[in-house]
Amino acid sequence: MILITHDLGIVAETCDKVAVMYAGQIVESGSIYDIFDKYVHHPYTEGLFASIPNLHEKNRRLSPIEGLMPDMSLPVKGCWFAPRCKYCSSRCTESAPPAADWGNGHMVRCHLQKEEVSTWRN
Ligand code: SF4
Image (cartoon, rainbow, N blue to C red; front, side, top):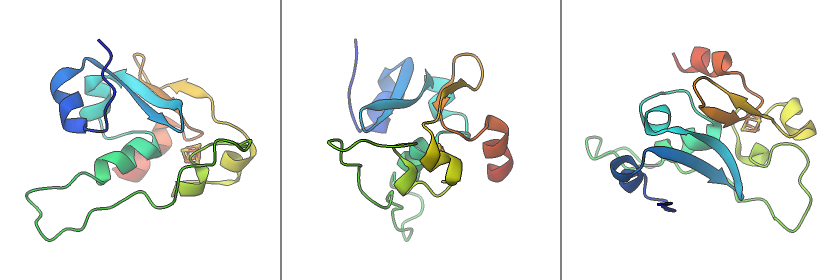
């Protein structure tokens, strides 16, 4: 069964494998453990998790992903998420990021290396 949803709670309860899509492109995929239990993610996935309400922090405002989706009718150079990504650098706007295996089939489509993300978030 393939389940398509924006509800990450349903995904967590139902799925074995997860593919995160942005602008029609899979930007991250892996096991449910890769997506929900690890803290190193594609920047878009990071933004999705940051935008989930936390019932234990009642005064905390939601953190939406700033910006808008790209216009899919226009050609895009580089990473499609670049205009909204807080980690964007010149390489991101110059070339499309490859899909990289961050271990055991955990795929991330980003110019960042897994080690860079791990260092920043520790
Ligand atoms: S390739 Fe660059 S712009 Fe795209 S998600 Fe990764 S860091 Fe952000």
